[in-house]
Every structure is written in C-alpha cells, then in structure tokens.
Amino acid sequence: MPKKASQRSLDNWTREKWGTKSGKPSLKTGERYLPKAAREALTDEEYARTSRKKRKGMRKGKQYVKQPKKIAEKTARYRSKKRLLKKARKRKS
Image 1: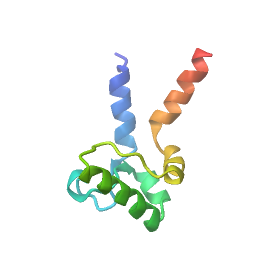
Image 2: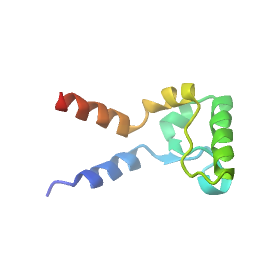
Image 3: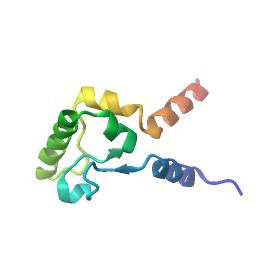
C-alpha cells in the first residue's frame, strides 16, 4: 500500500537527520534545529549567528524565528520541503 503524503514527509525528514550541532534539544539550548547537511555546510560563526537570533526570539516567547537572510539562503537547499514545493509549483503551471 502506498504511503500517504504525511508519511512520505516524515520519511524525508528522518533521512535528513534534523537536530542541533550539540545533539541536545533545541528548546533547552536555544540552538537552531537544522538538517545534518545544512549544519555541516554552515561555518561555526554562521551557526552561532543563527542560534543567537533563535535564542533572542525565544526570549520574546517566539517558537519560530526566521534565520538571517544569507544563512537561510544557504541552508534552504538542504531541506526537502523547499524542493517539494518547487516541484509542486511547476506541476500547477
């Protein structure tokens, strides 16, 4: 039986090995939660910068905090969702 879209999404997410650089929960450390390939692509300085922004937002009570623009552009290629949305948009047009 074929998997539902939600199940395929979870499979993709699992394959991407999402987490923090320290391996500890993001809510405890305030670190940015990213796919392993994206974490490895960022320099220590870039990861620290995006994590600082995340912590600042968390102190204001926000769970979802945008990344700095250049870092967001750099890490976007490592997330399945963006690729999937791009494919879906092409199909619609």
